[in-house]
Image (cartoon, rainbow, N blue to C red):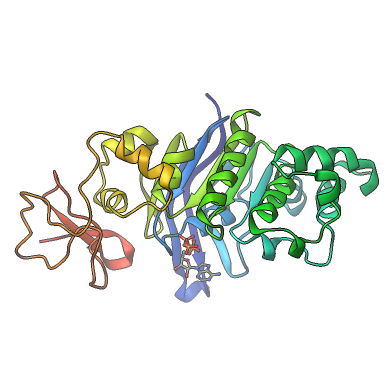
Length: 327
Ligand SMILES: Nc1ncnc2c1ncn2[C@@H]1O[C@H](COP(=O)(O)OP(=O)(O)OP(=O)(O)O)[C@@H](O)[C@H]1O
């Protein structure tokens, strides 16, 4: 299967060149066409910076210093503003955690969807009315003809996120990037919104990259997963394989932490061979007596990320964020 998105050996820095902070170090990631990939890692590991800088959407002061990003055949690193504008909203649609901050509070939601269509397809907003209704219906907004006239604050959080997804999907993008799309929602609504994202990808053969700290969400929705730690992708592969045979200690630590999504938890529990529960030293850990940390429940700083059954080693962030073994 060809890749819709290929990120290769990406380096990203921030701050003045002389004292630049390296935020992403050699990240490589592929999102095959028609598949859902979860980019998972703890807060601050560099997930958002990786995705946003890859799409040319990183904040000021953040720059790519190496690597390549190919989206549907177009190289984005070093691309001019016109190419990036064509790609954003056209080839890739983005959804963020908080729809209230991504939607314009002063504009009716239908007008905002129509605006996305006008931007890439031309014409006047009212010419896109039928497509707006169709989009709202496709993301499960009931009564789309009425709801398109609502302002964002008149809708529930779940409906607002559906509207944000409708905007992201407006121009039939090849790739949907969703950054913590369900974190701001309560648990039942989370499952519904994930369902919308899954349908939007599976039925249209569209690829999706979902950024999350929640392995349960990945278990629920993704085909492949990439695990990010301290600016590096430490492990990448099919979800089932990574969940049942995690190779990297950090992945094991993440898997041992409690996923929030009930359905994801059920799927995880059904996978044989997953790591032990947090808070306990695994049987046979060679460092149990010397090391003060416990799996997934470390109170120290910097934390040791994992020491689980089958691993006789503990790891912690070392110089420059690289993992070093604790001896
Ligand atoms: N504009 C910036 N300038 C300097 N540092 C930045 C900038 N943006 C992000 N960072 C730093 O880069 C690191 C990675 O941030 P990022 O937002 O990508 O993490 P994340 O894994 O997405 O976490 P979260 O889930 O909390 O969003 C953090 O240490 C953050 O402080």
